[in-house]
Length: 259
Image 1 (cartoon, one colour):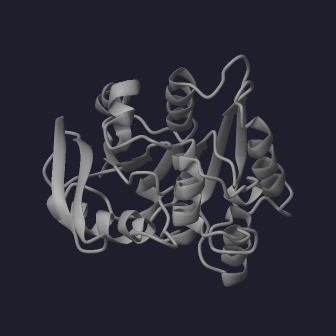
Image 2 (cartoon, rainbow, N blue to C red):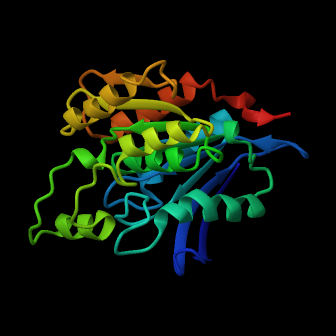
């Protein structure tokens, strides 16, 4: 196994970017499954490495892990800022598959996961690029359309305006519910959605709105699965536990190296 710290120029963002990558040992001619792992608000490409045992998980399970840093962008194409959604959804997979030829490009071998704002981001990216990512693992993930916005002088208001503008998010490309409905109408392939939240998460109610939406879709087209964690909140213990359970749920283990 190798742990690689990358810094390269993104054509999409027109700036240098940082990415941490875990690459498993593979036999010649074999490919590996890839976990694309997104950080939360005010995090960066090192967030999962510093706060969880994700490197050990990757080694034990024989999978690749990609951890990009996107500042406070929620992994979207910002209204007043760079196109981070295009970067993580299109450019980054293309660049890394050329660098690491052991990465499988099959959608069913690519899992996009995230915590908090990264949980929102991974659902958004998975619904936008379902031909790239077959599985979504969202941990403590609400929909931005359900957050009240008050234009004030604090830092988060400025971030919100940069990401989503000042208008209503409902019915726009930044609404997870809207993205899901549009994807269903398009008749494109659908990702499998796994969603988890801690009982004491301060945004538990927002997570329940996402849960209610997916569980309300007739026939469960996204094969939506929800798991709640009694006694846990919006913590590193929760996110590590949720990630491990997601990997177990999809039986992603040492057999992840493909024939």
